[in-house]
Image (cartoon, rainbow, N blue to C red; front, top):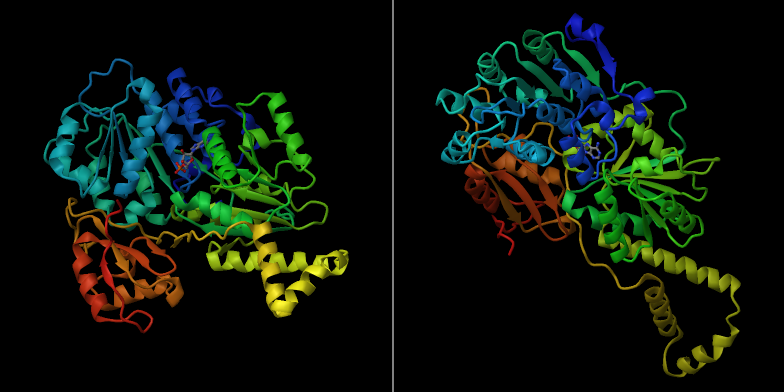
Length: 571
Ligand code: AMP
């Protein structure tokens, strides 16, 4: 573990790696009933390691320096204590807590999380970020607020207008602090922090701890407790014999992607791990709707129900078990071939536990992880902990799937040719050969066999998405421009339709290259990229959309002129 944070912090550091506290519940963390009720409602079964470590000291009012990436449950790790510390008798005016985040999308996400957890407490949460009209945000602040979630530029703007009053703020959270520094928000953060009363609690979360952040933490945090989500030390022999693969997919495409991966892998028996009870129930239903034999297993079920489910899996009546970690604890299934992480697990240790269920007794197991573009950092941590590479692959295409199905049909036919008694069908073939060529007869027979075993062909193409660029997109022009982070044009992002996709051999790099080469934009200004079979969608800053369209129309992609236009809104 690095100890490049102040000496006081380094003396008091902890690692959120599980251990004895592994079984702690949310109630053990000292959370109030209203919050516990919200967590139950959301189907959270147990705290993640970062939550176990961060919640009690934060509730006690301590400053904290947490090293945790997206996907670890870090938002709840600070959101729950922030809510817990809100006094019951709130005068209802100026904010009591301020959460600073680098991007608009994170501001919205965090504010939604605070809202969900704080519903029974009546917490008023307002997100403010660049790109949204200021008047709306002014009105929201005027109406009274408990927690403000803001991007630094917009927060400073509102502060200077006198609309954001920080005199009552008791807790400040800096989330994804490294990203904020990367985006040139250092001065804004300093300017904001001096406006918040000195006796406040300050909490900083960051995926990485670069030196600049260390010096900032030293200046603004008081004797912080340092928490790291996982030791990044490979441990000998920890990784079982498991083939590890990850697929990068957008959230909305996950059920289809999972189906596709399962079709290509055809596991004998698999466990699909989800984060919450609700996710388990939803996914089980979706998978059954898609023709898989899936069973749900979560902490909300009685022992009898669980035994029944396990019986079905062992007896082969079910092929997929969709489970939370809590429910699957201690579960041992002989015939398990695949472990699927529907999300990147919240801790590397959880990943290791999960995949330890396959690859036993010298057999090779398979671990598959679906990764949303934002959560890729955690994947790197897991690789370091297990000491084994995770291969990032693209989701199998329709063509891959068809090829795989044909392969299965061929194998089935071969087996039949080698083993079965086929004589009784001879008459059928002979009669048909009066009229048709033997090859044609064979082709028709293969088609029937193929359709009988594989069902109709699935034509749904899953868009390819790239890992999120290392630096997030900038906010819109509602934030004041600063020389250190020039804006390509400001404003929201726009999605452009480009009439060439995978079938034309287009890769994300081709599109980024074309845009960076032909316009003022740099590669990192380009947002998410989706590549479908015959087209691609690219996100660019809205202010630069016309420039990009004109430039790309005048040039070629993969040697071809292609259609470029704004994406038509979906109806
Ligand atoms: P974060 O790392 O904060 O981005 O959180 C990742 C995801 O995990 C979010 O979708 C949360 O809703 C979810 N999550 C956070 N804590 C828990 C928990 N204890 N149990 C289940 N899901 C959780």
